[in-house]
View 1: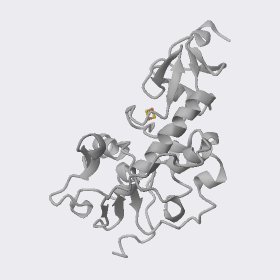
View 2 (view 1 turned 120 degrees about the vertical axis):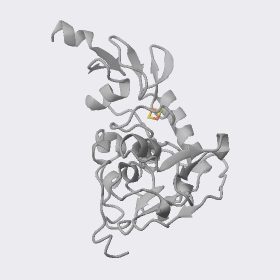
View 3 (view 1 turned 30 degrees about the vertical axis):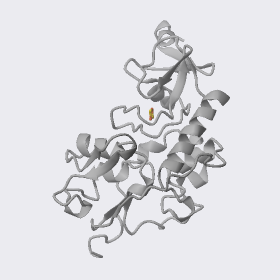
View 4 (view 1 turned 90 degrees about the vertical axis):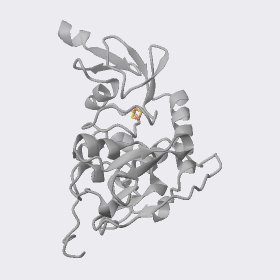
Length: 253
Ligand code: FES
């Protein structure tokens, strides 16, 4: 092993992880095949640091793996009972804050929130459900928006702005009233510039933004995270930006 490669490495749970300068801890970990739980991260978008699922302990201090840069020699704690307990609590709060009914959700089996809950063995929501009243927008011919399932990761906001160049989605409100809004004259998706091929349509980690007419194309039980736990599909996000265009979508309108 060269001196240079030794200099550009750090450890996660005792395992040596090589990195290239400029990589975050999360990027280096995923590239090395080491899974760190995450929800608001996407490899094609700048780090956001909002979900906190990726929180690790770096040289004794808490830090977000998706925003903290990899540095030579740092010691990172990731897959420990303490951190996974905290992650379970974060997931429990996400599940009660919105309306997530996995058994009837088209995204079941493809949902990162659900997959993480399984992976971290979240057995019950623990907290009282908020049951918020949130709108569903089905006005777009090819895409529908269900804010009941939104976890406020803002991936759609960032993808629409930074990849699609459209700013279709934005964050409005503060604190518990924060919510995603649609940038159109009526505030409805059908009046926006959103296209089915937009990255914003395909980065949602949950079932908040769904393509119409493909909900059950793949049966439950044969979907991405039905096959293998999310923690064993370290590079699962690599395919998440690819548009899934429904068969003859435009003809069916
Ligand atoms: Fe790091 Fe969400 S993935 S805070």
